[in-house]
Length: 130
Image (cartoon, rainbow, N blue to C red; front, side):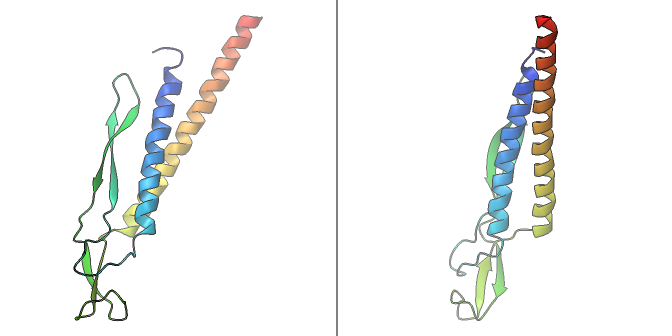
């Protein structure tokens, strides 16, 4: 492992976790987004991680959730059909919040690794200077 591999690995982790956080924020923001029953529901985004050769992580892709969502009775909605139904995304809010905490902690850990690596490299350089 080279001198800067640690920084590259931590950097790739921060990039992945930022993408994951963005997707989760979008999902949470749209958890109550209703559409008419004739339209597709908001499709949640699920980020897929993949190990990078040589260390680190990358986004392998983003998988979208089920466009059929779930039909909910909301007769007061201007989007409701003749039966009073609308379509909402099938997003499990507790799962999204749990994943949000995991993504935040992963990002924070990667930032700390970057800081620690920088301090270690600076200490090594100062030893070399005398």
